[in-house]
Image (cartoon, rainbow, N blue to C red; front, side, top):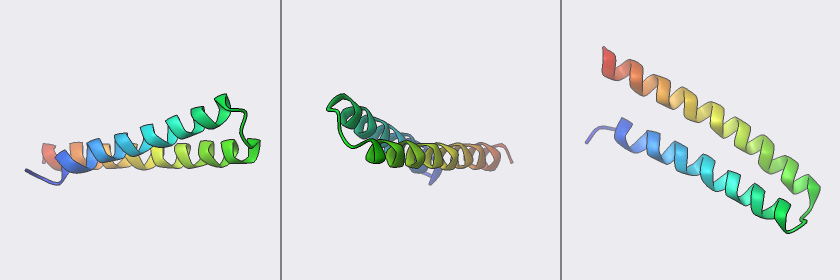
Length: 62
């Protein structure tokens, strides 16, 4: 088992968890500032996940 088979699902799961936390906060009528922070965190984590996926694809192709 290589590191890519662990990193890619972990990155996707982390993004999904932050997304769900943001949705739950919004549905409960929680603090708008918390929603903004979660949205910013999700966007940063999505960028990191894309970078991880691209690096894994690049590493497996070479």
